[in-house]
Length: 492
Ligand code: UTP
Picture (cartoon, rainbow, N blue to C red):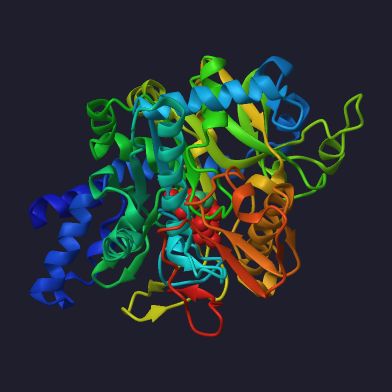
């Protein structure tokens, strides 16, 4: 750790000496805490990112609009229109790679979940399914099931390591939750948690905000912090050691996510891609999702706020939206590409700025929680590496089978616990009906029983499910029942 004098001169050099304003008023332990925190921040880098961030606020929207082109047909395929034999080949390819131990899952779970407004990691949220399962449990069980399916296909038992990126606030709780629940049946050696980096929060003049007299205000550096975090935490080496060559990376908050999806992985591998994005058709021209497209010849995600309504409404000769590839934070990467990004491209990644209400202490040391934005958080986004790829592909999937995000509380009535619950139960009803069952009430399928609708016939064919709630489970599986008929919302 640096000495006080060194820290003082370094802060002066970086225009951040106000961080020591209250130093003499702090207890010895608090002084130490502040010095430790200051020593952990790279102020030159933080100042540089602030400069980049402020510049990005002046970006010319007009320009992007006129440079946008849709993803070319050669780099695009849709599950809906894909030949069934080809689809089966993709799936088999994915399962074979799983058996070889070549596939890992990279879960982005370092967000603060501010919109949902819970105080614990979002993966621990339960949307009130009949089984009471949380997002983490659903995802862990999908991994277990896929390992079984891969073994069934090839006769070889492989495993899918689960890499979970957390951040300062979510790390300990996530670790404790998984441990307490025995990793939901996964081998604990195959579950690897690592922390992403944090960046200081700034006021609009480039001064770092003090959250308390002895604490700098810090926030996670965005899901694009994953590249640096993979490198700094030795995760890329861990992948190499285990022989993981490809990863499926996704957000924690999509209740329908097909974790380690063998079809998507198989498609990307068949195409020889170094990076792929799973997309869904936009629900409407003005839906608030980014679109995957090309800008000035380079792949990128263009945010809905960057596109004019006129461009968003443009259609192709089939009458579909021209810019229809809705980005859902669901990606394929080769481990080689991840390493290349960490080594070469990370520092050139775009930075994004969010104006936020950031609690602060004033010059008298009094703490305020502002009512309107008073500063900025700087973030990198995971998709901002598409421009560095050699062979980028997109795979379109139906929304009702693959995407329902949990972002907001129920009051918002969109991307909230009720819609997530509704969407997964609706999908499960469809799958049971497809397998010959009749569903009058609500039905939930355990991921341990079926990953995407397979193996259901023997359980459901010719049966009518008219009780209020049914949970279809694997024979040796235990469902922990919760009070009030198993329906609980929130944390369990
Ligand atoms: P969002 O950008 O939707 O953020 O994250 P969030 O934290 O879930 O929610 P808000 O914006 O605070 O309300 C999309 C995915 O990226 C992860 C999230 O955990 C989620 O899975 N993420 C986000 C990170 O891993 N790190 C970050 O710094 C930000």
